[in-house]
Length: 331
Image 1: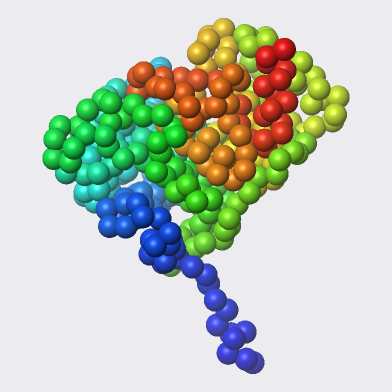
Image 2 (image 1 turned 180 degrees about the vertical axis):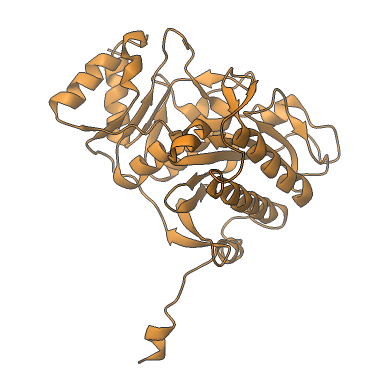
């Protein structure tokens, strides 16, 4: 048997990918590369914890709530600790803002970057073994290195992101991220402890026949035109696919095409998803893949945040589908 058939190449590791592309991304040297490695390392630890969730007492509610009023799961808190510790020890981040914390957490005044993170989105699905994820954004700090970190460092428009990504913990664990030069996906190989490039240069179809929305909230939608758009989807016999785990829903539509809708409701008139922890990152990724992200009126990445936990409606996915949705909302 030929040696080439015996030793089939296993692919490009995340670390090798970062190093080989440093010349393309001026920001991807030194501290920035370390930051990506720190996030990847923490995700491996969280992945390990998730995989043994049914064997030890880390499932279920913690008995507390986060700033948004959501019931905190034990794994929410654990994931928040894992990512915070990894970023603290790496030293590249000056501060982290987390969906699980009320305010920013200063890590290192000599760090260059701000990390905004939802450590474990959809964690309530752990009990039923449904895919969940981590969402993150990276910004350059505005204040001078060595000086106190400010709130203004954290409240930047999505257009100022230098990187964004998500980790999907599912049938396989994937890290998908962008540094503004396209989108690449890496699959975790647990026996080797490495992420390998499995989905290079991801692009999203401009049109598809899948829509993702929690129609159980339909009686409380407050944005006019949503029902008209959904009726049009049904008339065209589009498939409704809603997992209820944001990263999983976005990931499926990113690979197969489709639109994800989370409109404003009577209980959440400003929307439910957080700009800094969910919408900005996912919008950056989807736009880099050729898609579109909107609050129904304006581009998500151009929203000027005024608070860390600010919320927004979100319509994101295949570009032509989002454009049609915007037309329905603004008749």
